[in-house]
Length: 143
Figure 1 (cartoon, helix red, strand yellow):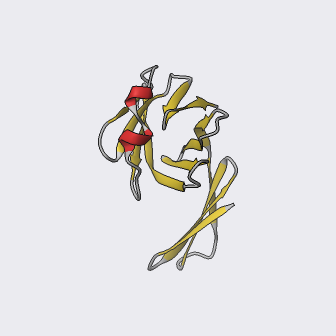
Figure 2 (cartoon, helix red, strand yellow):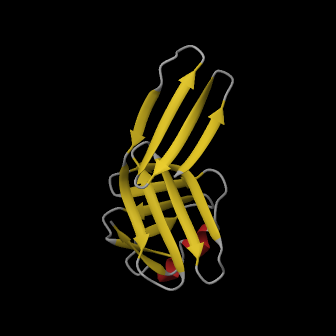
Figure 3 (tube, helix red, strand yellow):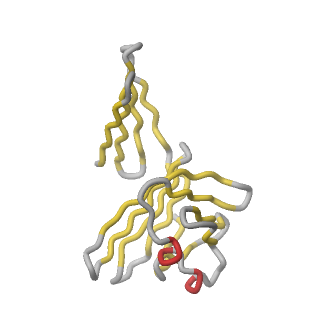
């Protein structure tokens, strides 16, 4: 379980992640009732078994995503977040906080099925019709 609490002048927001679901709880000083929304997982890519890294991308219906990366060789671990939206053919990921070097993670020389395109240093387009993508040279299946 991961929990993030954000305080603002008039309210606070709690984001909790349990498995495939993210829960958003908000409370403000004007109401005593609590609203809970469940962000549903709509796309999930996960690395196939390998000895190099654990990687996944989860895209939620609240237009957010999470990319998790853990190198098994160097014991380096990172989680990236941002906004996501769909076009007719693609999922667009926009990294909003810390961001990886996208050309290294989404290396087009390993993209044999043309599943993604790096648009800028903070934005990637993924073809949602493809059954897998290659991240850091590792095949990730669409679940």
